[in-house]
Amino acid sequence: MSPTQIVRNNIELQLKKLPERRLQEVLDFINFLIFTENTESTTFYDSNTKVCDREDYMSQFIGGVSHGSLAKNIDRELYGE
Image 1: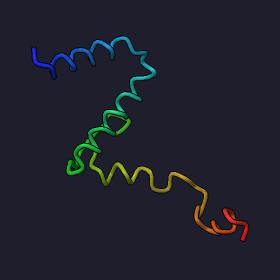
Image 2 (image 1 turned 60 degrees about the vertical axis):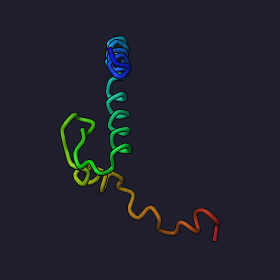
Image 3 (image 1 turned 180 degrees about the vertical axis):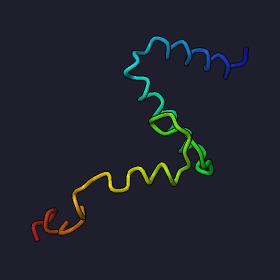
Image 4 (image 1 turned 135 degrees about the vertical axis):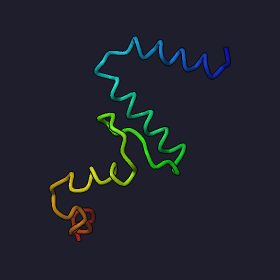
């Protein structure tokens, strides 16, 4: 058995021990690693385990905060000017 296969088997064994409530965190972390490792990739899994391209994935966050312009008057907020 190759070292890579040993690691994969160990990951599978540890995943079986993990509570279900933590599995989403693991998937998110794996997606983060894939995204940072291969920025040329155009597809990966979102948090609902659906395949989507990078543009669609990022567009999910647009408008996620309904706070208006977050940078408006930021100097006054930060520096009291």
